[in-house]
Amino acid sequence: MGVLNGLIFCETCGAKLHLKRQSRKGRGGVQLEYCYYECRNSRVCQGEFSTCTTHAIKKEYLEELVLKDLQRIMAFAKNSEDKFVAKVTASEGKERQRALRKAESELYKSRYRITELDRIISRIYEDNISGKISDERFKTMLQGYEKEQSSLKTLVGGLEATVREADQQTENTGNFLKLVRNYTEPTELSGEHVREFIEKIVVGKPEYIGNGRQQKKQRVKIIYNYIGEQFNEVVEIVKDK
Image (cartoon, rainbow, N blue to C red; front, side, top):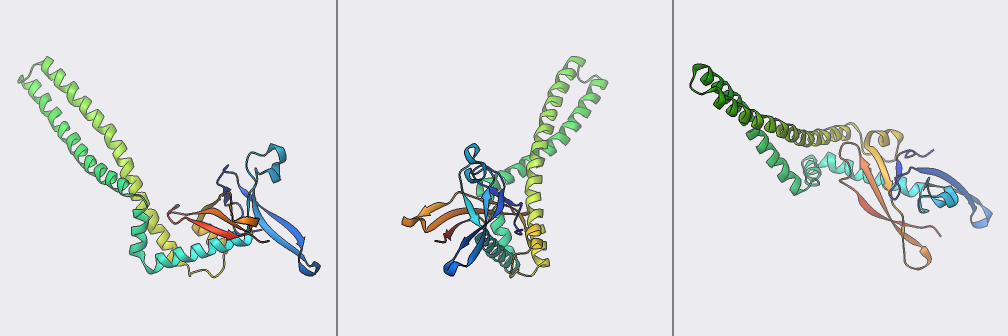
């Protein structure tokens, strides 16, 4: 069984790719066996009832790709932590960063106003009791302040969720760096590395290049634990003749 088994998904339909083995005769009549991952919903697997196109990726190609990418990211994170964190953060986009800063500012102002409204409401209670404002005026003012406060509390709830999400991203990046520090750079792909670092892998349909279908370009997205899809690449794989 491959170390990536159960983590590979089809980009087209979302189904899992499962491991298959085939044998064929090579030069001199030698029996060769090769393994590949194929979408469970492909025509090869489901016949006329298929819900996806036929596409697959060789096990050795995928494992080599994942190993190289894991080596690259671990080396980057280990040797340049500040740059690594900056890249993960930058992947969120400038617009998101601006939105976060705006949310933090609005959160501060809204919390301050809610506290201020508590003081104002307390004061008008006292003014009403002392006779400085009439009961009718007190009721109108109280309704207005309480309505504003209720709206602000709803706003604060949404803003706090936005800020928590950003804090979680920072924590996730730290957790990934802790993982990297606990492992040496792998020379081969192991089940332990896969479980610790990889959430899932998404494989797309290949696009064949040139005549004779000797080459194909296939999109492979490696989604890492904690840091997500920041480091995806489009990978070209040579098809065996």
